[in-house]
Each structure stands twice: as C-alpha cells, then as structure tokens.
Image: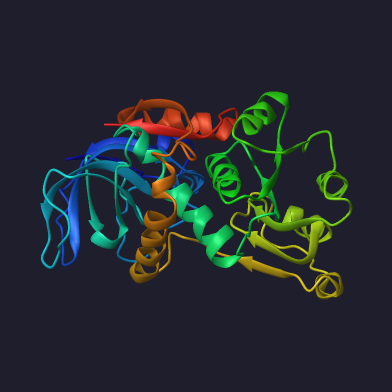
Length: 325
C-alpha cells in the first residue's frame, strides 16, 4: 500500500507519499481500507518532529479516518467485511489501509457521506470526553470555546447547543465569527479586538463561563481563570500558546474552580473504547436528527497532504480539512 511518510521532520514538503508494508489486523482489530482522513494539529506537530506517536502506534500521521472494513482480526464480533465505518486512531490515517481496535470504530452516521465521516471521530471524541465526561457541562450553563471556527470548536458549539447550553466563542475576524453564529454560538468574541474576559463577564451579568474549552494553554491560563464562574471548570486540550504558565491558586480556590488537562491520542485502548461508546450512545443519534453535522472546509488528495497542512497552518479554514485517497 501507500502512506504518507516523514523521512525527516520539517515543513509540509516533508510529507512523502511512499510505498510501505500493508498493516495486519491483530487480536481485536479490523483492517480498514481508508477513504478519507482529516488534518489535525497533532499531525502538524508530528511532521515537525515535536509529537512522536505513542508506543505501538502506526508511524504515519492521521488520528481519524473513514472507509470500509476489508478484514477482521481474531476475536472481533459485531462488525463485518464491507461495513462502512469511521474510526478514532492513534496514527496511520494517512494511508490506504489502517488496522484499528474494534472498540474505536463507529458506523458512518445516517445522512453523512463516507468522505465527510472522516471529519467526525477525533473532534467528537475530544469534545465529548472533555466538555461532558470531564467538565460535565449541563443545560443552562455557559461554555466558552477558544478557537470556535476550528474542527474542535465547530463541533463543541453544536454539541453544547444540543444539550441546551449557552455558547461563547473566540475567533479571528467577522467571517469566522459569522460561521460560528450559524452553528448556534450566542456570544461572538474577536480575540484580535476584544478581551474575552470582559466579553464573557458582560454576557453573563458578571458570572463568567461555567466551562471553558481551551486550545491555547499557558498564554490564556491566567485570563481563563478570571473568566471562570464560581464552580467553573477549565479544560485544557492544547498548548498553542505555550506549555508553562503561572496559576494563581488563590483565585482558583476563591471560585472553587477546577483545571484539567488531557490528551486523547496516548490514552489506553480501553479508555478510547469507553469514549467512543459514549459518543455512539449520546452523539450519533443527533446527526440524523440534524442537530449535529460535519463542518468541512475543503477536501484535497491524500498524495497532496502537504497542501492540507498548509491550509491548516495558515489558519484560514473553518471546520475540518480532509484528505481523500
């Protein structure tokens, strides 16, 4: 088969479409013939040599995919050859085939194309696990989403609105904010021109956000704590603004607030399977009902993965950038 390899870390040109050995479905795994995958921030970091795959994972980028099952490994039940699926991966989506633990598979939702389905697993699993399983967002509460126009952000808006929460977002410029509004965002904050702490407080009569989903890390840490409501929960899922920040524990304690930081890629398979099962139960029914939908900015060929990386790094996209085989 062919896959996107990274002979040497570097810019988008470091991605090389090359012939590699076929993967084999092991115990509890299925082999998926890939139709499409998505470009995620972790793929960019891996290309740059800054994010190694977890032990035992495929060396190729790609944290999610869609496709058809072509083989079942020992011990797999509930799936059949020919099933159209999408999957959460630890790596390997940038390839013609990938071996996937059966617990990380999802059926392609009704009303979603096989290509579009590749945009769902990583974003949905990230949002559901952090905003709902960890931070326990409830109906009537306010969620602040940083990077509202990103793949994660566009999904977080939809899922929060689906459960009856109010959503504030930060994004760069009126066009991206308009797209966030079209997905249901209630409070629109241009981070280039506005202070999100003041805007969130103003929109909540001074209370603040009950939950904050943050991709920036250190750069926003102090302001995120100020923007939290009493009993608020800050979920950090990215470090685009640095890894080391100063945390005022007094301010956190005064609000009886909590800070959590998680990754998805390196979790054990059993934890990923639990998240995927929760997604299938709680989120998948929302898709055919029209309450949640894929947001795809553009689709490019897998062999031209460098173009997809350039689009993501330029930051002009809304939603997901997909690669098709």
